[in-house]
Amino acid sequence: MQDAFSDYSIPLQFSVEAFDLMMRQRGLDRSRSRIAVVDGLVVSIWLVSVRGPQAYLISSGTRPNFRSRGLSRALAEHCISGLRKDAIVSFQTEVLRDNKTAAGLYYSLGMTQQRQLDCYVIPAQEAPARTSRAFCKANWQDIALSVSTLRQWGPSWQNADASLDAIADHLLCLIFEDDVGLGAYAAIGTHTGAVHQLGVRQDLRRRGIGTELLRAIQQHLPNTPLRLTNVQHDDTAFRSLLTCAGGEETVGQYELAMRL
Image (cartoon, rainbow, N blue to C red; front, side, top):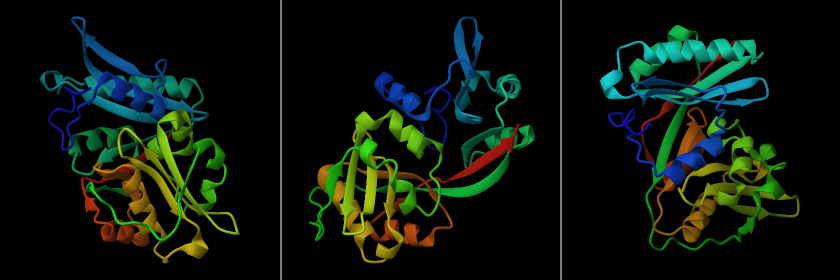
């Protein structure tokens, strides 16, 4: 996988442990995934997750020396055929907006754009400013059933509730509560600095709580850049929050999907 992504806009550098965590989070289904092997060497991958009637392409790629041989298309068609036989009804993925080669393959398979997603990094802070509100730690399992009421849009597959259920032991969750109940929350990967989810209750928005919540995360993870992947592009308020917090936009993605 690292070889396949070595010349991409965002080269990947995984340890075995980080790769295993990524696959656990996204829900790798080995029986539905496909690989191409040439002379004993894995040269192309098509890694898939299935949850109920929905499927998701975690990652696909081919080693540079084996491209332009039709391997990705062969894996894709074989995989999708198997999903249809298993009565899976939908298939989705994300693609970097500047990766025209991969996007061309996905479109030719019948996938279409669903939404535009932005990605941000907030630089590490050695001594983040203190917050005026108290944010408490919580277990993901204790808040998982409540957080959807604070969201304006659904998270992408890798940040979905089911994905966070799978890595709950690697999450830092911070919450703010008032007399009404849960007012704000964030779920962060402690090993990666990835802010998988962040939400503020509608009646509390535009009061600076989101900004303070990001600062509270930085207090718990000093010297760690915070990364937010797949922020819905048309949520201008959320994007403004990230900009005010010092967030720098990186390479964005398109969410693609198709019916099977």
